[in-house]
Image (cartoon, rainbow, N blue to C red; front, side, top):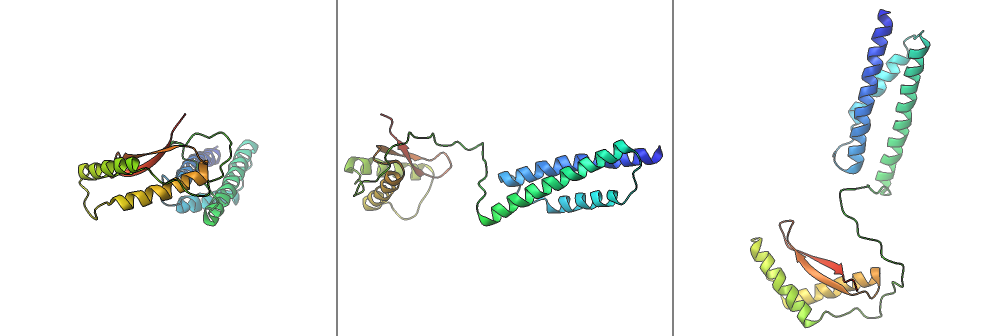
Length: 189
């Protein structure tokens, strides 16, 4: 009976550690944790292997151990597969906290032969908005010129055209992150 309680206690600890390790790996894959919990995984694998050499005569405890061990090895294969995909650059994190752009209806996304030139009003409006946002955020540095803004708008419009076709786009200045950023927004209509 004493041996049974010891093994049950060890199995409970292993089960708890496995849950924690699973959570840590999911956090690592989501980008919350910066480092892979390799040390915890190695220690858990060592504990599972040590228990394998111990004779277990009670069928229920033996079954529980085998279930935990097989679950751990399944998780290990899954984690190794995800890590391999991350190394190859094929793994894309599922970040549910970040908003995603709505899917656009399928249509011809063929860019025009020549990118749209921004209008002078649009360039002036964006230049004024950028200058005032930079002043509010306390940013200094190289002064913005009308030519730089016009060049930036032309390249951005070309990129948007390649991706979404000839849909109308509006550029706005957003400084909610602490520094001014120009963002493109599709105009519904």
